[in-house]
Image 1: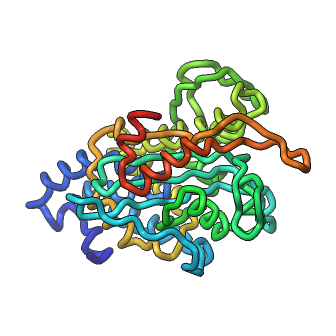
Image 2: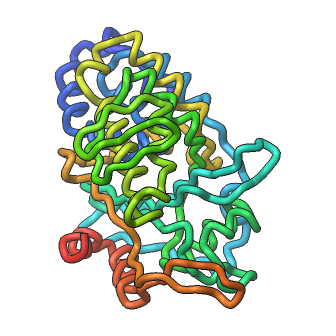
Length: 345
């Protein structure tokens, strides 16, 4: 399938209009996956037949970098086989946001998630890895997991995650979180349910539903010192805001508002850098293959932890719960995340 075929307008295929709208409804929650990668509306636009050029322009505006994935296949986990009865193997993405304020600095990965899509394409799982997770970094020894980005960039981060979970990572995306939050303003704000009262830089966040702008959302997802569980609560907020953005992006009010739609789409693309393997056709084909039917199919969880420790050089870190992490890794490798989530989610 070519981009030109995929992005043809509704008027060019009138006989397929009803089927396209039905497929849009069935796959709206795909946006929760691809939205995190910066293309939340793009597949929806194609399915609906609306604003096709804006969607394609946004896809084209995503940066592709060849350095985001490991170049050597040595010691990388073996591919996960396709589960019996399925036509696709599961897919795994590493999603990173960085805390570098200076463009000349690499910084450390301030946001680190694994997005897992099972072979049946009926769910998606967002798994936060605490940035202070104490893990073995290939070639470096034990350290906090976010040091991998500082030492070796995205490629070493991917190697570290692959070794930790014994799964191959298929694609990588780096999120410019400051830019990503600007899409919230293009959408007229989003609402999240806040679990913990906090204040940050003049913004107050009471418990319960909170309306966020781009600026307040950035403060909301960066806060950790005033939260009872620190980084754990911050990671939960990050996932909540991502899902709130996706919910707003897929709402009827946005999909039927040409100006708001275009503003949101054109804001999304430039704020993501992905590996060169995640080209337009790969994104499109992933969208066509999804079978998500509702919000409950998007699962959010934290990698297993076992309290806190202190390193020999006095660093405070988050301990890995080895037994439970093995269970998570097994679920990822055997394409049984639904069972794992039912027991642990």
